[in-house]
Length: 328
Image (cartoon, rainbow, N blue to C red):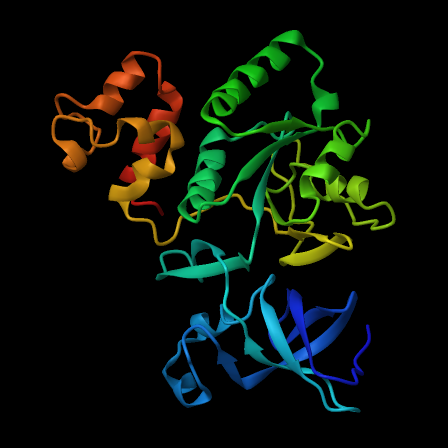
């Protein structure tokens, strides 16, 4: 990795460790320090306020996808001195320890679309987890592609039919679906076209085949693939941190570590119904208007839409479960 730059440049953060970041400048990746006087353009936060900021907030200060200005002195390591305004950011709730305080973890910034990856089998899709991904994306108005991997493992007609029934629910709502097989190279060229001229984030639980998908997309990448435990049905984290990968000259993909749990962040439970796209036509049509919680109130338009087959019952129960869990 190069560490000698001859001029000041604006770049995009490609990875982050505890004290350094990778920054892509003019197509090359450089190892950069993070200044303890870094400036935030959108909030005018200066170094004088640093002692008022928590460690977690400073961990979220620079994330993968950020556009940054780098100060360069010939012969010294480049240093990030400014983070430019974010167009958006994807966050989840997390805790540093079991039972600890729930805090925000910013996953990535300046994202154009979300690629939600699920395996057709081994492990089986967790549709409630997909619903959480979709809520996260809808909250910041990002489009989502649902990408199904390992379709070569589908051997029985009933397995294919069951998968298609679930996917049809999401397609009816308006989410596009792509079936892929890294082994047979099915859908890879289509996925490459979907990623064209965008900064996409790839998200999915461990073992769903994200790494194999990346290797198929980018021959020569040669990422190590981890097998799924046949007893637990869980995969190990092949990707250990967020990583931005250039697909071509105008396309980038942010790979994320596998997630087994995904807590939502900064979403009011009263606004959760808006994040379920199929519920939007019925908002304000309930007897109690916007005060309706869509649980057991009489005259609820959303519950009636479930009865009428206009809203999928499993999606409705997923919505109720999220409300009951307070989005954690």
